[in-house]
Length: 177
Image 1 (spheres, rainbow, N blue to C red):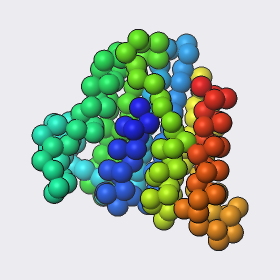
Image 2: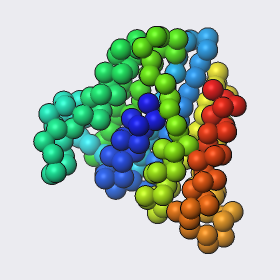
Image 3: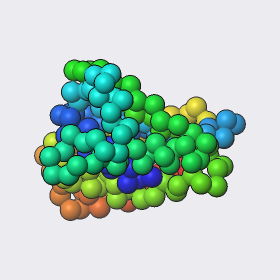
Image 4: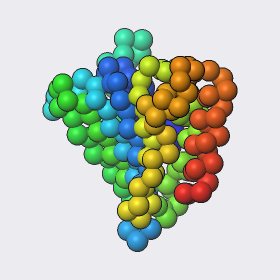
């Protein structure tokens, strides 16, 4: 699932986002797990939102298909969930992928630390936030805005910083999930 997050976040970056907020939510009572990716990019009109679910549609010029969001939607459906996209031109996009937590076909979350390290290392100018929510209790695990303040000029794509990000996120994941 972390690779789906990487793919959707890269789409957000391509759409000119300056801030990408990733929220992982688990609700044991409702047997649900969700991944929400929200950006402040250029957004999409209603027609484009419909088209992004088509695996033979892409805005990329280097290939003729766009499998990322259709595969994410398939993963959601296979595990008793669904995918919802909210977007408006000029206002950004929110993608919410919902899964039944206990479903045997729900894909594992994967290595979120490496996903965040890859995103931040490749795009240190973008602001990222990673949030966890468990049973209605929210916790912010990573904010590049806050991290920049703490680092006092040390670049986010410095190898030691990226290693810290990966380890910190993965440690938090073990505590929460």
